[in-house]
Image (cartoon, rainbow, N blue to C red; front, side, top):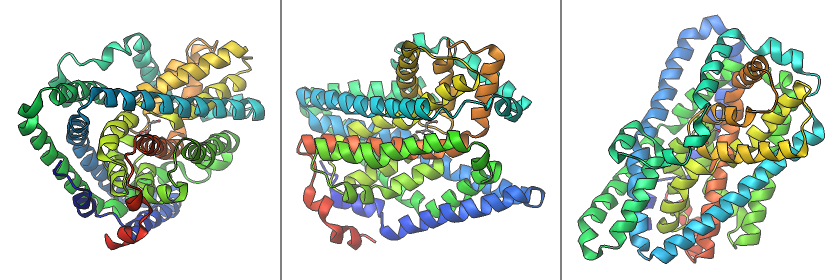
Length: 443
Ligand code: ASP
């Protein structure tokens, strides 16, 4: 394969300095956003301009996602060649993504059942769910009805070009996987197509490099606009609910992932998280695992996780593995049942956890998607239609901040699983991973 890791270094050009710029952009965005929230009228035009800058940043990263996913999968799978090895990767991926998400819903359920944040907040929920949001919510609930049945059929594209045009990630990945597998079986005749996709991959990485020059202003704009819409005061009004979701995310991030890295691999936890920090910051700023995917791939590959593993595990993870979302959905649904005085049987709690697991995997890696698919989990728990709409609208109002956090968790877990599988399959270049000198040279 022509794609050397050195090329990726240059192409992606990640550096410690840029991490600090993005980090600073987030802090400044929070401060400015909160200030604007308190002085709204004066800053309306300013927010409009920032919104355009932020949206432009997200759109331009999203622009490379589909060519990147297709080319990464084709290059990765055709370079694996051996379908037994692909099967091994696939089984491990399902196993580890499964473990991580089951742990996430268990952590979420344990916290919300132990602390019971929903008790006594019914009135607050009713008051805080504005009418215009309730209308949007009604539409979202209607859209989700019947989705579960079509879940598996929707994975298979009738026309891959139509799926490409519509940006439907799961059908695109499904087709790309089968197409690449077939390519790997047809011998030398596959060279022109594989070379073509190698070039596409290199070019999309180059574009990612260019885009990342604007990461700090883009993330500043996104954070400012988000915080200006809710203001930091929101944390006091939703304090208990938010605290539980936040603690759950911290347990995943600081306990479960490091423990999994330690138990299932010899990847050094601190070094690995330092390597992917830029992807995590972008995930926080954009609230989109899909938009962050180019960065997640770049961060992992540049520090020695092989292209074979990254190209297979990360695009699938960015679409199917949403453990942060599953944790949030479990907490949110049990919280609402507590608020409306519904006592859950143990079987219903398990039902919520299983549905959260399924519905999180069906949600796209875009902002707010995890809130929309929550409608699947809320079904059949005995909430009246009015309660359903009110509860959903309450979550809607506070979703952006929770989304930024859960996306960071989602991306961290994709990278963690990629690192574990790479270690298990001897696909980690430990010299590169542990070599901080080389990292510094790139700056
Ligand atoms: N925004 C999340 C992501 O892209 C999905 C969600 O809304 O939970 O990972």
